[in-house]
Length: 107
Figure 1 (cartoon, rainbow, N blue to C red):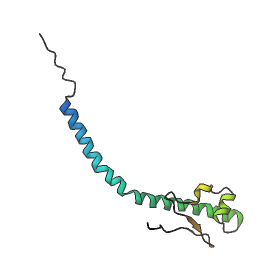
Figure 2: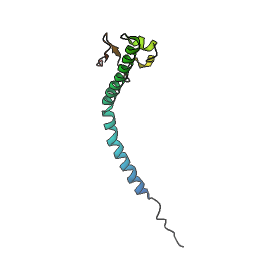
Figure 3: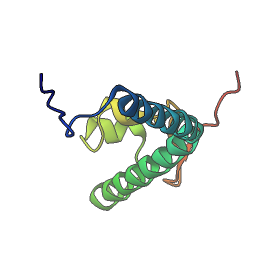
Figure 4: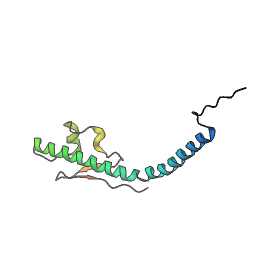
C-alpha cells in the first residue's frame, strides 16, 4: 500500500502555535487600547469644541450678536444632539462667545 504525503497542509501543532501567538498579541493589545480611552474622549471633546467655536463665529458674523446654544440650534447651526461632548460633558457659551466644557463630575 502506498501512502501519499501532502506537504502543503498545516499540522495541528502548527495551527495551535499560530493561535497561541495571536492570543498573546491580543492580550498585549487590549489593555493598551482601553488605557487610552480617556485620552481619546478628551481629544474628541477638544475637536468638538473647535467645531462649536466655528459655528459661534459664523453666527456672530451673520447676526452681529453672541449666540447661546439655543440660538445655534434654532438657526440650524447645530442639532439638538450637538449640545454635549461625545463623552457626555455639557458645552457652555459665555457672554463673550467663548466656548467651554463643564468639568467632569467625580463618581
